[in-house]
Structure formats: C-alpha cells, structure tokens
Image 1 (cartoon, rainbow, N blue to C red):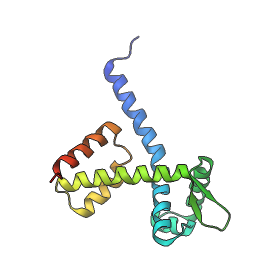
Image 2 (image 1 turned 60 degrees about the vertical axis):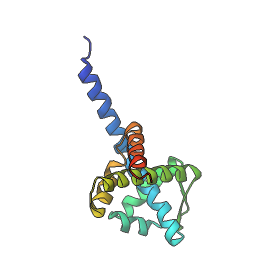
Image 3 (image 1 turned 180 degrees about the vertical axis):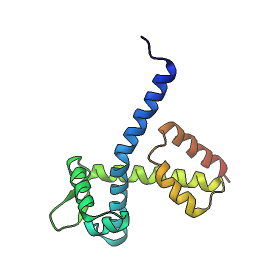
Image 4 (image 1 turned 180 degrees about the horizontal axis):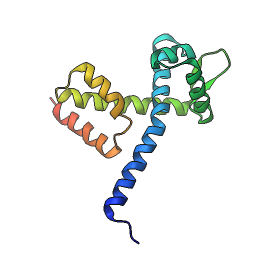
Length: 143
C-alpha cells in the first residue's frame, strides 16, 4: 500500500521537529556557555543551573552528554569550555536567534516578546525559512 503524499509530508515534518527538539538543549547549553565565558571569563555548573533554572544535577548530566558529543570539555570541579566544534554550534545558534529576533522586531513585536519567542523559534526554523527571514531583514533595513 502506498503512503499518501500528505502522510509522507507530515512524517517528514515530525521527523524534523523531533531532531530540532533533540538538538535544542545542546544548542541552548553551548550558547549559554559561550556567553558566560565571554562575559565572566568562565562557565561553571552552578552558573548554568542558575541561568537555566534547573538543578546542578541536571546540568551535570547534560554537560556529560555534550562532552560525549565533542561540544565541551571540563574537568571535575573546574570550568566548562567549548571545543572548536562547540564554538561553531554556539555561533550558529546565536546567529539563528539574532535573525529570528530581528525579524520579529521588524514586524513590530516588542523587545521582551521578540527575545522570548526567538528563543523557541530559533531551534525549529528551517534553513530555507531562515534564509528568507535574513533576506527580508536585509531588504527592510537597506538604506
């Protein structure tokens, strides 16, 4: 029996959503680690837990996963550092966030809402849509 085109399209969309959800936590962590290092010179488990509103135990588990994935390095009782790969992921996540945020602001969304909404949307927007948002921003801000 052949899968209806509608079902295949939906399945592909759900696969993309599941992949985005899987990478969302990693992207949020590496972006925050990079931001903390840039502003305070270090990123510690306690800082991550405070900024993310989760327990230190939760942060420790995620950091272990990020280490296995080659995104961060850390030693017991020491700061957490991004690997070269982690820095690339953090920069890409930060750029997606900036594009979505700027787009929302151009639509007239207030700063606080745009910041909050961009945090969720940045992980789920496709490269095609992101490119369209970027082009829209560039077109609207020429001058």
